[in-house]
Image: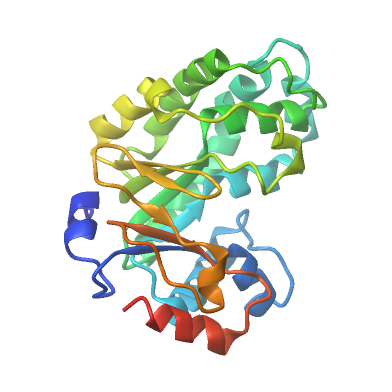
Length: 268
């Protein structure tokens, strides 16, 4: 039986007082993969990378960035991109993307490999419904996001909830909706996420007994729990971590390894 999110909160695998999710993609690309991107499209190589990164950094959950895995594979699927752009109606691109069985099964295979190989429970990170809708439209050649409204996020949440059933048997403890905006300039004008409007995703997470969180650039909102927090960039210099029940920290790609280990030690 997979580890539940409540179990992670009450007894972090690392022994820390507060469980820590680490986004080490940029740092790992620079320091472990020598400038190459994390190989999300290759489960065997990706598992090898995670073994190195997590053995060194000791997070409490394995953060699997499904959005990044989709983006890498979509770059090789011109026929799917063409189908996504076949109609200009808002939501068509993301619906077409999520309905592609070959891509979904490929990513499900990646999650299976990482779940089987890792001694840690999984934090499955997917774009928030609004973010995924916007990124899909941009990938399909429709970068004008001015027409996207909060109601479109509710519709996209239904597509996402149906897509999530593929991961029902994976050892997922936490579903993280990635609602960041600052990491992609095309999202600057996109309306903000509201977790309460994503009831289909909330219901799916509850059904699968997963924890659920919404990640923004500066905050981590936990559904049904006391608050989580995003560790600010200043922490990696000499700042203090926020007080919360769960921390999510992104390690800067240009951080010195000795400093990273020292700052992680400061977390307990």
